[in-house]
Amino acid sequence: NQHKELNIKSQVADSPVGMGTAHGKVILMGEHAVVYDYPAIALPVPAVAIRVRVTPTQHQADYLSCRYYKGPLADAPQELQNVQAAISLAQEHCAPKEQASAIHIRIDSDIPQERGMGSSAAVAVALVRALADYYGVSLTQEVLHYMVNQAEVLAHGAPSGLDTLMTSTTQPALYRKGITPQAFQMNLGGYLVIADSGQAGQTKRAVAQVAQLAQDRPDQVMKTMAAIGECTIQAQQAIRQGDLVALGRLMTYNHYYLNQLKVSTPELDSIVKSAWLAGALGAKLTGGGLGGCVIALASQAQQAEAISQAMRQAGAGRTWTMAI
Ligand code: MEV
Image (cartoon, rainbow, N blue to C red; front, side, top):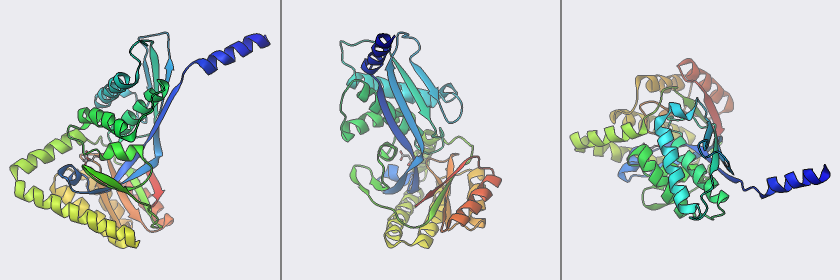
């Protein structure tokens, strides 16, 4: 019996397992403008994470199983397409050509899908990491980002690369396309409340819609983009100076400009308004828009709780509060 047990243990130890993780993100300032080469400030959200586990299997057909924040992956065809793209890219890069054995991929995610929290990038990051781990391939950040960005082109159309970076690193950053991101510490003594509107965000459609608007009214849209860029630069200064009030005011301006780009919705606007009325220093939609999440800034924990309740009463489903 003891011999049998030892044998089983050694089989378990020998069978390869690949693990990969990633987390959610929110954009504090500058979404959409970042696609047009302006800077954006984004934060990792470790409270929502994704874990991928790769193991060998005998059953070729049953290669993927998922537990997602809301419902099965099949309910989000966009996400499924992204998952498959990331798997093919990672397999192509990492799997040894002679080794054609079947694998099982298990995805567990707390990141809400289609909510502007980086779910599509995070799943690709975790998948690529898990497959590389399974095949014993070490990945540089550059190669990881290159593969995830390719999967993101499918999911988002014209991604800035911000989601790829923020779901794979652990520090807030000022991000600008094509420029080395500036990571920084955030110790403002405030709170950021994130509220899921319950409405699916549509980043790909929102980015395409903004591109169309930029074609139809180039002067107006470029002025708005420049104004968002200016808000982001000022927000960076406010963060450096620890000025929560100024940061909140800039978030509110940013929401107003996102409205001009027509990516807000009446539901998002009403959650934003409820946060202002509950005493938030500022509030705005976050991510691509047309649904998704709202973020609000509070100076104290008690105020954050009141804002979170108000946002739920205004229609938000889940909320998360993080110290910033
Ligand atoms: C998506 O989280 C943010 C957008 O700016 C698109 C992008 O940066 O790829 C809307």
